[in-house]
Image (cartoon, one colour):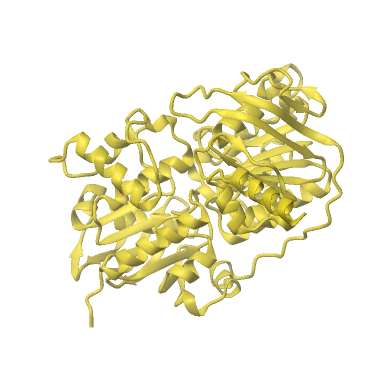
Length: 512
């Protein structure tokens, strides 16, 4: 028999009050693309960090290429041939892309050589990035590109990928899958974590399922359906969304003539953005990360108040120069793509994090009603099935998906008139994603206007009434969901809607 590339036996990792991994065993063969499935908090990230040397297990053994190893840190992991792309990135904000990549490579290489390698690898995989850009100027999606490129440059024997496709167009996902299959054919083993079940069924040849820190099943995902994988992962199929007929009302958000130079020298300038969102509808914006989404979001949320007067109207009032607090007074609530740092203060409790956007637990004279605050947080934890050690748990103690559920719940439970959500289900499991999408649709049906920015096309097709695409700081015309296709939206992500519209006009003119 072929010696396994990686073999875990009885891996156990305990934290105060929780067992993250309990006697986990896993075997990955050379050239195998092996999925690790599990709901948020199932122990997937902990297990991957054990393999990569970021965490020391309390019990169990790790065997790599038939030899028992103790991987004490990521540097030793990389020396063995193990590379990892984290869901929560391990990048230094003040360094450039090239400098961050250089830290994990052979120091015999010069920085210009590393920059050239980044450019070549980025072009090869369709993950374009400027090596000279400081990391703090990148969007979350662009940071993920840096992590992917850094891992590929190490020529790994085992590549661990955590949610790697969320920044890619459908066409680029296909190209990445070609690359991953080629790597596997050449003998590289791949551990693949994704909540996109169709990706796992298409790409992976084996799958280990975790639930509550324990292995609950091993299967060949090619022989499974999305429903059967969901049952293995969460014990049930996600509930079907209740998509009702659209009954849109008056305009709640009106954007017109919004052109703005990015405050970031490496950012994307906005050019003549125009869109409307009506009460009782969901409008989706698709696009590859780094095409102006971040700049548009900070304009709409009030974090950037440089927008031309009259270019942004909320509930009929000019909001272009209003602060976030004054926009909230008009009924606008916002969920940013960055959970820790913008969506929540890492060291504060979940209860105190409610105060970022809500004031209903603040009494006369500014005194906090701590009992009411904890009760509100406890209600959100219960309703949105947030796995946390109560309302006093620090935000940073939650998994990414559970923190996302809490932040989305915080804003939805504020009963907004206009909800703007960026990447609502990035990194959450299929059950939690279905719940969040269902809550968004329920909010829409209650008369709220909802604007969703997402790189998950399936998500946008599932919940949007109308769709736009943003590319290079420009916003496409809107498309009714019934008229949109994956192929068409994928083409528009490259900014090709003008060419397509011109072709349609020419065809119509010729037919006439």
